[in-house]
Length: 475
Image (tube, rainbow, N blue to C red):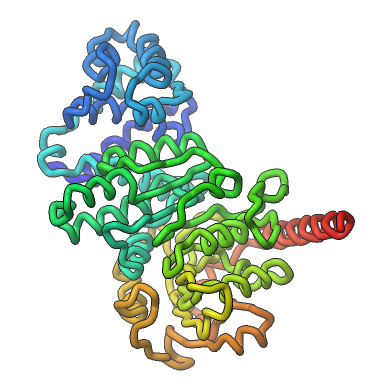
């Protein structure tokens, strides 16, 4: 009986067929998105969403000489003529990078040879595509790792924030939809696949509970298919959260996200009109969107790089605003190797929106999962077990209000008062454990990467000063 991992590996091995066409891993996953959609529609009985004559069986029936020409026409037709809006969105502006007809024939033959009956019976079709996306992220050191968040981290964030039926759950930087899928999986687990909910509540969960935004068209396509395979039919917008799309999103009960790192393309400011603090730094802009986008009492868990904890000027003002409007109750310092950009160190910020705009953070608890930890990657894979002690320390209250214990200077969990943080100039880069000499030397960035990181920070600072000069000139 095939497992998800077995089928994912078989599909991944097919990328070797396309090497002669010069197709990258990411392009290959996009190619598989189209072909797998057609095949899975046949296997799941969802072919009715596809127009007659443009289905897997129609593609499979073509001889090698005609197949590639037919396939190109099929992609165009489904992207423009399909009556199902989700199907049309998946195939919007679709094209193939395959140049040789024999390569397409080989892909179709190999995909058809997989034991889809067993996969369907075991209910692993939905997990298969997500596994393929995860494989893409783990195999490629650039590109995919920028938008794919490790499943163990996602599952841990979902576990402590406890998504509930009836809540509006948002991811404003959705990537391939990992956070939404994990939240949906958890809710379905606790409601026996929604069967414990009323018909009205089920309708809400399937069509309204989740809201997501993704900027990159190909990644948006992957998110749409991931949603479809998991029975999620909620809005997944193609657009910029830092523009008008983000401004129009409904207030959320829970936001789970891993925003992109770096500055806004071209160094410009977000086009949002509702931000108090203007910045070209995408992480700070997303952070403002998140805490402003929560309902009173709403909670968030967001992955952010270290610089968000300590950058001065507008960074300090945004952190102060966050701690005024929200209870920033927990920071999880993540180990290195989770994301693929050289030298990037990350954290998860957990906070709850207050009922007013002032004075909601009294103390911040910090869990250090970075010091004296291995560098994770292929040799040392990150697992859910690595987060068990953090989840125990976090406690059962999703708002971080449960009983907690400061473990002292030798422990991983410490409490810091708001007064201390103010004295530090709103600096949240709070650490106390030192790495043993034997650990983590591999994690230090190479000189070239370190210089690049410093240069990026200087460029960001210059842009902030230029924007400030313009604002002063207008006033």
